[in-house]
Image (cartoon, rainbow, N blue to C red; front, side):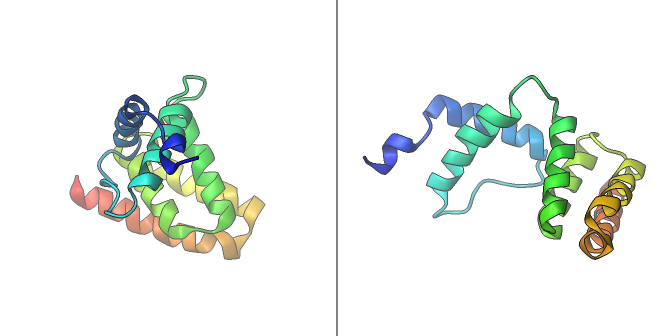
Length: 130
């Protein structure tokens, strides 16, 4: 079995690219060189098949994604998704802060304190760009 047999079709990659751009709203650019197979799989599966499903909107998927990221304590990825959510109008500043407050009850202060710091950084960054 060649590596090419597991890669998504060009059509799925194109659809995934459209959804990726809508999800991240310019916060993330294209994958760097050397990551093309990884990026093709991500675009063809996660975005063309996952985020594009109509059963949940981007806001709902974003909230689920933010909760998942918070659970593993990845403040940098939290910042990327939060910035995209704020720029895309999926969350307000107040809602972003409330997400951290709510998650603190389930994840604990040590896990969410870094998220709160990142949240404030991103809110300030988005406000400065407005």
